[in-house]
Length: 118
Image (cartoon, rainbow, N blue to C red):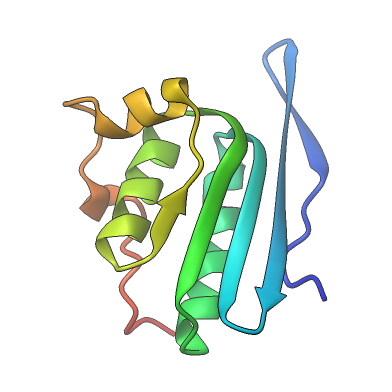
């Protein structure tokens, strides 16, 4: 079952970026597998996928093993997701360095992803 399976492409400058978010439900966990680049409009797409699951009461793990890049808004969203209690798993050394770098946008600016929102 796929809640969020995104494989759309968008032209940004001369580069093509793509993000795929796949829902994985197993008996004891719910995970979102994130693949590609978390930039531009894809940040909002991931936010909405994650938010829907949290509103259902799921404890969500976010698998970042295939994420190759995140812009400042993407990093802020991932930080906010983690602050809200979801686990970020499997990030590469590069993505991990983005997540733990100082500076950038505070998590609160990642779209106000409070669990209380509808």
